[in-house]
Length: 361
Image (cartoon, rainbow, N blue to C red):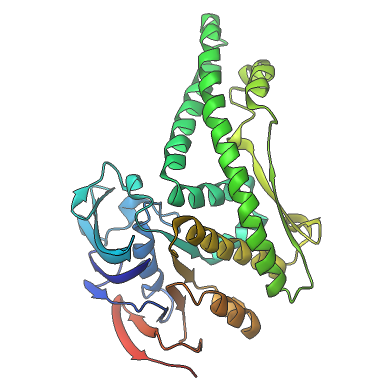
């Protein structure tokens, strides 16, 4: 899977234009606030996910413009394909091969990418929601059925929570709680099982990658932590508490991933370097697992992270990504790699220009 060409109009601060990356390493460089990350964000949006920067759709259009357009030519499923995103009225619309999709989320599974940015270090140091989002985002790209089940679970969870808040004032509603419990249990159990299967596969790759990054001196551990062993029983036994608190206290929305380094909590005891290495290992493992599941490798985006790593870690990461199409953003085009397929693109004041090819140095 790789990007052949992307073009844009009225997107963020980028001047109207296009670029044609190579199938290997693509370095996007320039000073801060010139539009480097906007370029990689544009690529990412074709996965059907939200902006990896947390931006809302209405923030993606150039200031003062009513709409924006992104077009992508890409190779996937052994054929050339085309996609177009239109952002208008604060909403995003997408078509794949001239077929309009019901929502941008329904494009998931057509174009797959893995992104790592400085914010992803919070995978280790942040709260459980970030780790749940990590595993959900990865599964949604490779299993559209999971995305549908997750959406149904969230909708059911919100309806159950609304009911829990209403029951104290309307006791007769208590009789309807069992209907929502059954539906929530069914969706939630599926989600938990899919997460467990995915993490079992992911941790093998992540632990191996982390070991190599640390020079085989440290060991990474990943474990799924459930809020309930049997969700159906837990929902029944927690009813009284849930009604008093007004929210659902157990289920996949309360689960977590325990990350350890040398058997100690990474969140509590790991250094910043260890946390960064753990997050990178998880992301590189995500790319490997996506390639294994889909039968073709996803696009990999490394947004402003290489400068934070020493030369040995930079070298390891680049060498481990040789089979992927890679986009790296950085301030200076200093990264070297023995490759015959590499391109440099300079971004300055919103203008993207191809600079040079460079070969093994």
